[in-house]
Image (cartoon, rainbow over the protein chains, first blue to last red):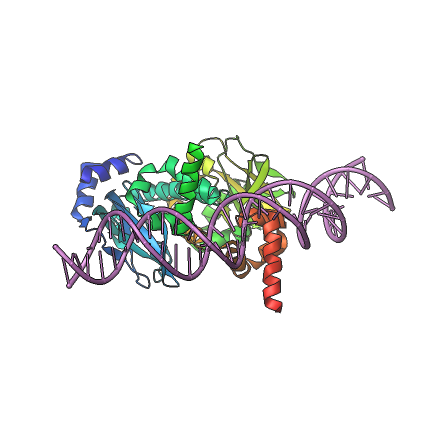
Length: 193
Length: 193
DNA sequence: TTCATTTCTTAACTTAAGTGAACAATTTAA
DNA sequence: TTAAATTGTTCACTTAAGTTAAGAAATGAA
């Protein structure tokens, strides 16, 4: 399990055994049951998550309705905005499958950065990459219709459509569950006739 | 003009005179005329921009149509995704006003990072903050109707509505120019009766 | 200044998404 | 195992966005 993390890190910076041991000594690996909530609206938190196996989602509760805005699966990192802004969280984070992840807080991060400055480089590269990736995702969302977004998702993350309940996918795509149902029926119809 | 940049940086890390002089020696300040294109689709670039005065926008050309996805105004930073991915740019960047900005490339950045490691900390903090901010923007976009997005924009960046042509604002809000016109008329109507 | 271009608005019509409700299928919990 | 809750689909109806077109207003260039 640790190897997945180390392989991931090694893509960005090389790691010595000493550094690996320091990371392991922090005891950051967690097994979480499906349905568990990791972060609630209004809570303060310093925790970042790296998903090794499984899936977590972020969602808001607006007018009593859940609005799912993101899914994080294998090899993806989530640092909730409240960790950066140091304000109470605006949203929930929960596991939609049994999930294995690492939980690291900003204190631990600072501690590692102090011992191994190259860790700061890793964090910089990672957040720059994530920012660029998310800019493109946002641009695609803005310039596409709901139907195009769904077709785009089939291309880019086909497994997500299998793993995730439709009504959560719907708000992720910016539409109501009924509209997603209809839109899918429309696509199937097109492929037939 | 330099002071604006140094004040901005000082919010994140303290700067010595030596460091300031090193930055100044790089000759990064540029005055750009309205309408100038800074980056074209298909071009490779290593340049990041920090807007001191004026406004730049990013836009795609899809099916012969311009799709504006972002505006960067005073005190905002843009590192185009192509700089991170090291691939040809998918979009254009151009000035929609006479603009004063800094242009810094990744080689210069590495040079400074080598001399002053605290610069790496600055970059890390900046991109983490930008990532968090953009996550929230994206979430708000997903969970709002076009009308709500427009009302939200009036709250958050009222000056933008004055500075920017409507048809560019429209694609920024994810609708056609005609829909933005209609939507605005609808809002005015509501406030009357 | 004048002409051409760009920008913005309005309108009529088409298409698709939102809404409320019903129902079947599936999952969860007692 | 059964009842309750959740989930997904369909339908009729409403509302809003996309499309096409026309014309007015503003802008820019010759």
